[in-house]
Image 1: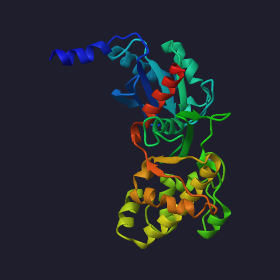
Image 2: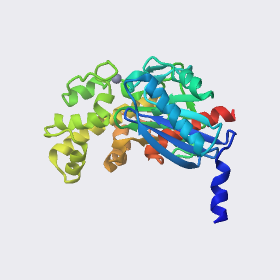
Image 3: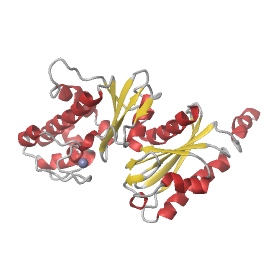
Length: 321
Ligand SMILES: [Zn+2]
């Protein structure tokens, strides 16, 4: 009994930087993860994301940290991941939390919490999480790609995130689908959420997969239905799968030619479809010129918890350096 008390009590009320909070801000929920400096997850919980009131949004994040402080530490260091393009000062240029667009979250949280916070794009932090202790651990050059609501990723070199000049290095989903594939599958030119036309994301994201399924004649864009039908050998699902994989393979070719990674780690909802991961190397190689082989493709180790973990790693690296 004494052992159990001792194992918890020293964590409460700490006033040092040995505890890290990683926050993952999504369009519907905000999750906080409490980590040790060695990245062991001690605790995590969630709360709904306020999307219309910015002051409520900032206060909700502040309250999560205050609650964590009351349980674990007085002066933990904090990393935050969220969708959108975030510049070095913490200014959010575009996000799926409408009230946060154009705001400097870093400065506004500083006013409440009086501490330095690291903020990064959630897809980039997925790559960082998989590069440090994840499925890409031990590889020098790691590309982490998420295929879910959107299609984006990030590149890490020696366990450090490569952000580029403006913070959007890794956005493979906003390159245009090749004219060859548009013509081959008779695809309408879809408008992407970013404002451009015929971006890969509009076709290879989770919603894109559902759209392709319907394009081939299915009555529903439901991806669970698609997987059921694919497993049953249905003709429409099989044709949609081949088209989808051709597009996904081509989109990954662009990131291979740009970053030449040693491994690609794939996460997000679509990565849970076994056939996608298994056949991806074949469909990538179809689009690579001869003599170039696709690197190993691995499924993410941390999955849904990569957001809070990547945010914690981002802040830890700043503190360690
Ligand atoms: Zn786009």
